[in-house]
Image (tube, rainbow, N blue to C red; front, side):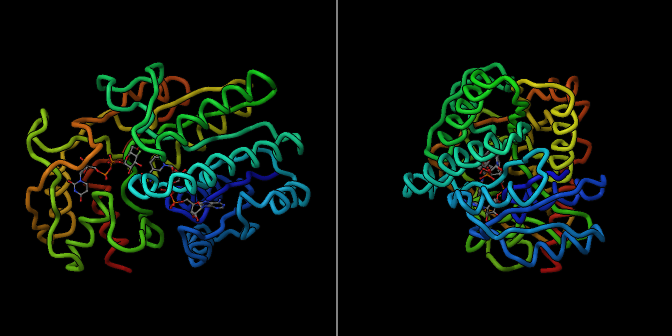
Length: 331
Ligand code: NAD
Ligand code: UFG
């Protein structure tokens, strides 16, 4: 029996595949490489010394997805595949709704047809919207400020409705905070195309000398030093959270939501300093205006995952920067 990993060639998916293989799980990866590269698959093999089945396919291609279920004994699905760039989702909303929502609908329909009832879904802290107080708890109301965020809010609802209609499903909705870092081997990590939107990939390029300086988006927030505060979580810690969720899914039916965060908030300037220390390189920055849609602080209350999944983040911000730098240097 195998775990089907959609989007397994991507940033979080590839790290999760490594952890699954290390735990002796059999996996099948499906990815269309819209935001990843085929080389990642060999890196996963290199790190783990294990092989797996791979399908280059789009979730929107129902026949291809049906074929995966008919050719394999799939026991559960971890669903990472989706488009994730917030800004791009504002200019290409239909592409985002179609890819993320229709892709998930086709996946769930084909799971149901193949009698596969265990699903782990990649949601995001973005569903807490602009108006909840920090730290965020899973029972707070959800909303969004951009099409990407709405796809997560809507898919969460779809999955809850699916369970209501068919209570033989076991569904775990994981709300990730800000994943950072890379596998300690330096063989896999986050490698966005073009100029990065997110903080640590941007800082990595500045430290490497590929970009001249970081622009800090605002220093007048109501936070410890005026810059934005986020809950950064090492991608390997995050990957391990999926194994804990899977373990629980195998023992019960239901739909559960968990924050996967450290519970700690770090400011932009704290990240800059940690990265400088880890890389031994300067990270020049200037203070710019606030970025539209940003909030002052976003961090998790991680107690539910700790109590129910027996999972918690273990790695520090410095570890995240060190591993990000090792990956960046090797590229
Ligand atoms: P990623 O872009 O690195 O990985 C996603 C993978 O899915 C890519 O390899 C891409 O090629 C693939 N994919 C996309 N659409 C597909 C389709 N229709 N069919 C087949 N494959 C498809 O992103 P990531 O950072 O690894 O994120 C994984 C998931 O976690 C996403 O759903 C994302 O929205 C969510 N998430 C990410 C973050 C973050 O900051 N990285 C935060 C919260 C939630
Ligand atoms: N920032 C800068 N300069 C930059 C980039 C970011 O100052 O060049 C700041 C932002 O203003 C923010 C912090 O760094 O205060 C983190 O920004 P990111 O873009 O790295 O991350 P966000 O918290 O904005 O959003 C990320 C993902 C979303 C996801 C959310 C919660 O991009 O998709 O985390 O998981 F929904």
